[in-house]
Amino acid sequence: MRGVLCICLGLAALTSMKGDADVPTPEQAAAQQQRGEWSDAEKTWRALTKASPGDYRYWTSLGACLAHEEHFDDAIAAYKKSLAINSKAPETQLNLGLAYFKLGQFEKAIAPLKAGAARMPDPRQADVLLGMALYGTARYREAIVYLSRAQQNDSRNSELELVLARSYLLSGDYDRAKAEFEALLRQDPDSTQVHMLLGEAYDALGQTDNATQEFELAAKKGDFPDAHFALGFVLWKKKRYEAAAAEFKTELAGDPKHFQALAYLGDTRLKQGEKHGAEKLLKDSVASKDALWITHYDLGILASERKDYPVAIAELQKAAKLEPKRADTHYRLAQIYKSTGQVDAAKNELQTVSLLHEQVNQDLILKVTGSSEKPSAK
Image 1 (cartoon, rainbow, N blue to C red):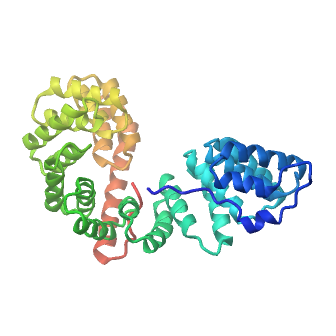
Image 2 (image 1 turned 30 degrees about the horizontal axis):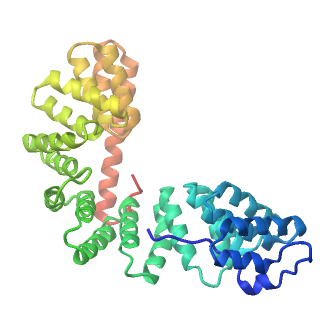
Image 3 (image 1 turned 120 degrees about the vertical axis):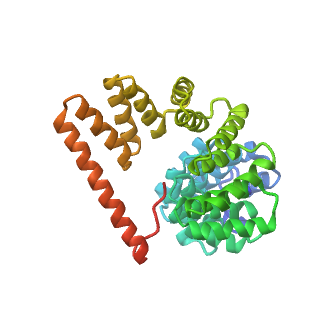
């Protein structure tokens, strides 16, 4: 993403700041800034804030110098002092938001950026920052509002267009995401990243063959993170286990701790009857990153087959916690509870299975009748 500079007070405003004979003048500080002498300018603005601590403009300009020197925490402190004097200064609000943004504190950046943009005659810079801050906090639907406006004002910025397209994808607007990625591919047919993302959009829309094609193109174009896993995943969903295993292995050759590839290769091996190899892969996945329901679901199956029911129950409960809406997990738990004489627990799990099946039927009715809303972000 293209760089964004701090907003400094204009020279006209600076020349209106009268200085005493014993202290430097704002004109001197402005000249130092123009020459790129940020350290000297900082000292000058500090002297001015001591001489006139009630002038919010001095504090804003000091903050801008500190930000240029990448002293963002000190810049934030200066901007807050400025806003304590004049809470409605848009340049100061935007600079405060930008400083938080530069520190990666996107949530804190949003409020001052919005406040500043609301009072600025030209909000284009704020549109980009707000869109990216909202994107960085996974508020994709809100991000789209600002990113789409920013993209209209900078239609040649392919990086911005890619973030906008990803926002559509991550917000669940898969049709719009697909259209955006297809447009990006017309601009750059060889973009591995866009082939990957278009594949994700196709997969979310249930267009598995198109998704497979896009992931195959991405995998063929060279080493790109997740490309072989993504292709393996759609092959796994199509029950082409040998082909899927080959792709998972290729991903693991480049990244031996890829927790998703480890998990789904383990599941593939389990489906092929290779229980010992499957268990090791599944445990390696958990050790790398414990975030997938399928690892605990499969480990629960393996423990159940050994009649190690306490372990099986613990694993399946972990799977249910990670993916509470999967009826198959609750059904297996019910069967184990029944086998171990825990009648009430079995009954509760079967009740959950019934409710989940009912919800699936309701969702299907809404989808067929066109009454459902866009799915929420995953």
